[in-house]
Image 1 (cartoon, helix red, strand yellow):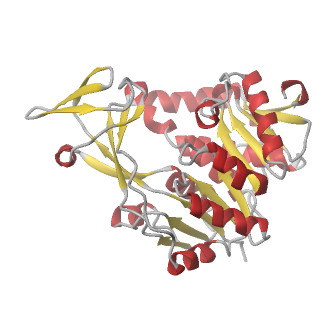
Image 2 (tube, rainbow, N blue to C red):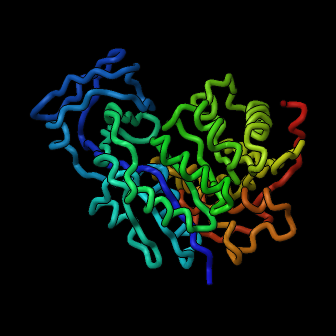
Length: 359
């Protein structure tokens, strides 16, 4: 019988606004429809490619062309089922579970529950590709402590041998999962996000994590470290994360430069890069549908955790465990983007790199 994987985080509803024009000026923007204009104020500059917090009026949602269920934990869940459809899943949303999420993760062998900590948040998405602007609502007000029933649901999740936490925004939830990992009840695989203060994550979760996944263009924003999105910056970030998470395999995804991965306590890591032929084929998919890359990092994390289940795939047979997990993550990411041909070991280049020099 296959081991069950648990996934946990917070879903969101992305509202897409076809035909809207966004005229921005610093923190302010006019969102113009044919029959109505909304004047919005954000906490930071509104510009193409930005994700910013803004006050969003309720009436705005009447102009959405469609709503799609997303969020890091949802993307990772879908990716696991994409690459390992037979693997049983237990999925836990911090929000109240609605019909849109149920449809999004309607897979055989998947059990979905919710903690009901808050209603699902709604993001407003304008434009596509590099011109896309995402306006996010202000975080919800503080809530009551977890109830006995909610702790019971967390206990149900922690029965899974492997648990992927992505986009967690509640400290008591993460603390409970970390405590279960410390007690040996589960293995905690963590995607670093800015959902919680990094000092809290560093103190509570990193010391017990089995896997840590981040990207070279996000790690500085999450941690406050001065990290350049370069191969050398990724080396430095991996070395530092390795010291904070001594039990973990650390993954730093690096765009065209592949992935940097290092094992627990290692003084060296491995760079895993797609062959030029496969990379070019993936870019042809992206050139037709720029939005295909959205969620690819979450899919990578899903592939990494799926590879923990015995019997998952044979990509990277003979490689060290950290490299095998990176290969599985890359395979899931390119599958998510839309590249369908099965990948082989020859589709990757793997090279050892020293971490000590970057520490």
